[in-house]
Length: 454
Ligand code: ASP
Image (cartoon, rainbow, N blue to C red; front, side):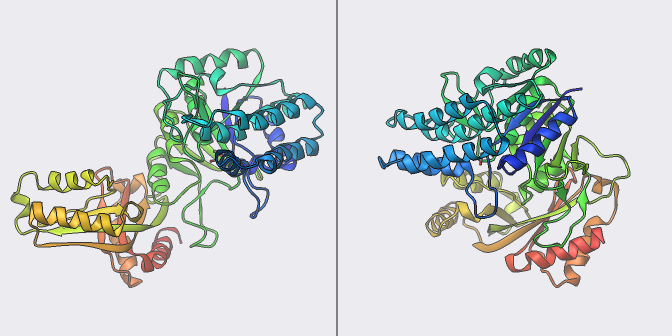
């Protein structure tokens, strides 16, 4: 049995948190691969080390003095090390050197400068944690992503794993078979030209999933600061029901529309390698958490969660006998493509098409240009944008085995006087999506929660 275990920033923010982490790794010696984030916030007003590194990078780029920023970051690690009573002074010296050295990197023409600054947060934390483990009875080794075989594409801030990396990652098993626990910094890899390149923000989850797939782990445990995933946003529903089990597909739907416990790119490597994931709480490790698996037991509830997200706009277009015009849809989409606008969903009727777009990808000028291009090329009868919309997702793979789920949902919404603007369900029957006005989002979620979880 081999487990890959990943700790997020809040689990590693202080000496006190690291003591919990040590306890978690020590109580289960199959936890051989430990992936770590940079130290996160100790309290709501604190600064994450990654954000402090962003400020450091900005000052360095602008040619300003960087002493204050450097000291702040080094002090964070020193504070943790002192709180732990770490004896290995070389580690802290190495961390301080590494943080200062960032301000000697080439600025001009260096596409990876920003990524190198950010990656220092996890990289130095991994060194510190490995030393702490060693002093407390765990034979731990710090492994840089370069040595772990995490080779990525040359896309700063948005690295993708090169698929031939998995073979090299698999060699890590030889180290753990010799009894070692490996501590690997999350969030970044190394390009074929040896540049440091990060995944997108929150990307340590992705590293954990990649390592789990590479070493063919039996389980990927993702430790955070909540007892797993809840059936609904706790900001809308007090004490929502916990979700004990969710499939990868359901998780993807939930994450898409507002559940942000796990980075959405982190699902893919584990999913392809058939490795279950469990989300657990560092502050409450006995809680079973939420398990992400391939399929549910047969009798699982039809709806596992309700997610919602605002900030959507629809582009609505009607034309009489539209269904007879070959290539109509392609022409609409190619105009969006020309404008560099991505779309999310496309509900259609006989004579109309609506395209749901995230509002942040539109500006008044872009909208004007889209409307005029569509009007001149397709001559629609009606054409307009509608703003301030939210989507509500009712998610559950077992919906397909139940009749009347959408009917119950629609009744709940109508009883709460929520006007459904659009409604779609894909062939996979994993989620039903309702589009409503922003102002109705909360009442819609409450009505659905009461129907399916009370
Ligand atoms: N430290 C990085 C961030 O704040 C990555 C992570 O924590 O997963 O985005």
